[in-house]
Length: 273
Image (cartoon, rainbow, N blue to C red; front, side, top):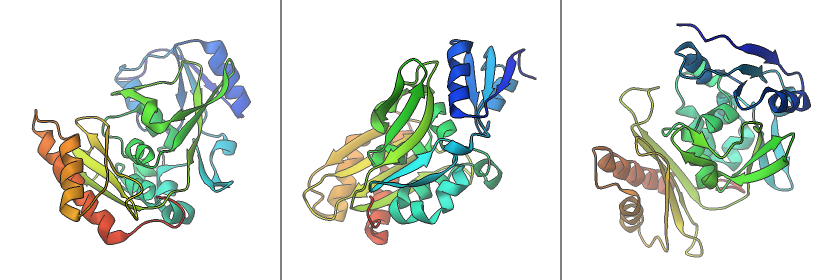
C-alpha cells in the first residue's frame, strides 16, 4: 500500500517548523527519521493531512553539556547516541539502550525525538530517559517551551502528552551518580523487546535503587531503599514491577535481575547515572 493523499512540507528552521505545525492544525505529523512513521503511512494506520519534514534541521542535530547537564537534540540519530563518547561517558545506560534499537540501518536513520514521540511500549530510549530522570523539552508557537519529566511524558502505548502543535526539541539529562545496568529479552537480535529493564543502583544508601521495565507490559517504574544486597535489590525491584498475569511477568523479572547484575559488574558513569 501507499500513503493516503497528504500535503508534504519541508522546514528549513525550527521556527519554520513551528509555524507550519501551528497552521496545519491537528492532523499534521512531523517526519524526522521516518523509521516508525513511514510504515504507518504506507499501511494507512496514520493518515495525516500534512507531513512536515524536519529531518534537515541542523540546529537540533547536536549534543553537548550546558551547566553540567547533558543536552541531546531531537534529531540526533540512534547510532550517535549509541557511540558518542560524551554519552558513553556520562550516560552509558542511554548509549546501551540505543544499541538495542533495531538493526544498524534503522539506527542510522532513526532519531531520538522520533523514538520518544512514537512511545512504543518496547521503546528502549524512553526507559533509559525515565531511569535517568531526564526532561523532554517541547516547543510550540502557542505555548512556547515547556519541560516535561520523562516519567510523565508517555501516557500509554503510542500516546504522549504532546499537543498537536508541539515538537520535541531536546532531551536534558541531569548529572547523577550510581551504577547503571541494562538488559533486554527479544526473540531475535533487532526484534522488538518482549521485556527489558534499565536499573540504577546508588553508590550508598542515601538514594533508592530504581528500575524501569519496558516491553509488552509498557513502561513501569519502581524504586526500593536501601538495596542491601544483590539478591535483595534484584528481588525487591522485580517484585514491585512484576505483573502476576500473563507470560511476560517472569520475563520482566528476569530482565530486572540481570540488569541489576550488570549494574553491579560494570560500575557507573563519571558525572551521570
